[in-house]
Length: 318
Image (cartoon, rainbow, N blue to C red; front, side, top):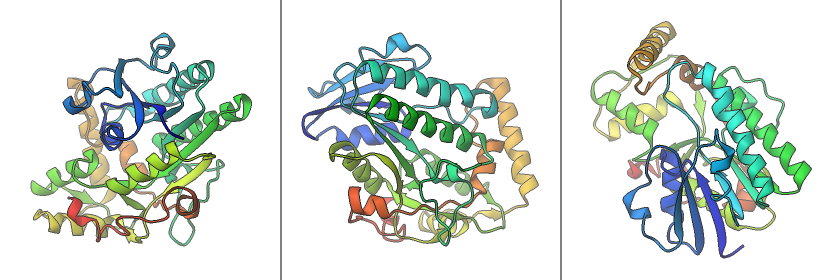
């Protein structure tokens, strides 16, 4: 699929911005959808890039942005805000439904949702997520993302476009917001982690971009793909290793109640002063769940060869 027009929602955000940077010099036309923030300066004034100010709450702002678009990559969402239980059913599910309705009317051929393996609930290297839509996750982030997946495949089946869910493990590397925030806390002796080992599936930012580009450009891509590398590790091990590599302090081992108390404190501050909340109770809930996906489809159809097979190979990206 060449000379495609690709729309990226949340293009001024962390992963959406990373994706736009990774695609800006390819033989693609990019429609970058933003809301309040602006895209990076080097994405402006390029012949193959058009920026659209949109609001997923208002479908009327989406029609021009999706005109003649072949593929949508959906990143947009609200994070780092107090009381996610109250807004996520709207900002995830309702807003995504608005996007799908306009995509159908504009005859978009493929919609790619950036999801995560948590939607299947607890999954480990010994019992990885396989692409089920029957999960019963605890956190609101995972529950609403699962609802988005169900909406995607319902629309795709009904209207005949290709629906793709990329269930991405933790993306790592310098410039990834949550990784950088964790290192800020580590530098100030504030990074804490619970004792129970939590299995995580990682993917370098380089391989994440390459896998997503393949999902855009290759023909006959549809369904659920788990995106992750070949490493098997715990969150605790990963944090220990990258903080040592960066010359920061290893995380404190803390009781869960203490981490939850800190999360509630951040949420209260965020609510009172209308600021970002770097930690929420729902983040802790989703973070304590082991997640690992079966990457067979990714290796066969999207990315047969990884640049960084494990985070130890890719640690220089920090």
